Image 1 (cartoon, rainbow, N blue to C red):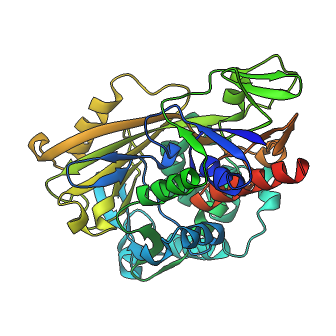
Image 2 (cartoon, helix red, strand yellow):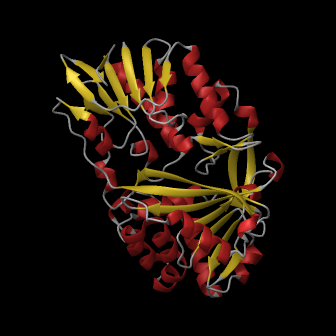
Image 3 (cartoon, rainbow, N blue to C red):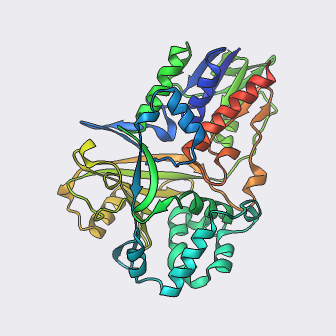
Length: 412
């Protein structure tokens, strides 16, 4: 069979690896580098992901893939320290002592919050798909803790949609990040950067005779006499890893329509700095109003020596389109808030993805599209069941593998 795969993110490349040995496979990628949300930028002496990534201890399919590619031995486990910027001050919240010292919650509230976090490890997520995170938090921890701790985080991540997000997403996110000890959260990272995984996947795919066409967006997706045409090139089957509504926009001369989902965009700034702005903290949530919701100091997680400068991500999310002048507003706010002089900034690059991921609003589970969309069109990506209710590298690898398996089974 000749199979077209639209998108070279983890889902698309995982599908291609599964299919390339026995089929003719062509991967279409609109950008000049592969990887999608896992793409990377090159700097003078290092390569860095455009969006921050790490993996978790239960990522079985990801680890199997890395083993196959000869990368598993280079996976390292590091501690991710956390902090909360609230009321004009950065508060470390990694160790039990730091949590006890946190001034924005009472001792009783901290105990209640701690018990709530522990409960996330054993909770049944299915019933929570129909309940908003706000409703659930009000019931479990009360309005005071919600307003003081959770509301600023939900606002920074979802904006006006904060009251529509499901409790299933919230509890899944808390649970997946509960693998932690007194020194912080246990997270996985690949020595040298995740670009090595994307590069190894591409090399593997090409070694099996498949094509990866960079700078080649899928412009049209057409059905004709039982075949699919991508940009007027004929294929027996297609896997699209684009958001369903984007796939819809490509399709002509077909009765197949995919259900649109609510997506949000990401605007992530990467900074190279002369010094650490976060006092050794890896992940700082911003509770005060700001044009970004988190400061992720990458070099407080992985060794500074890999880069020779302090690397920081400023994470922001948006609906529809990013605000005009966002880059300047982010830099100005960051410099003022963390007492950084502009002369200390070596470089500042803003990466924008208008479809960074679906928003898991209440009832999302019932809207997850089937992998087999009909007519030998298959779909996989961040919207897939494998990425619900919290998207991850593991989820995208699993979704791509599943789409390839279903395609093969249907066409035996």
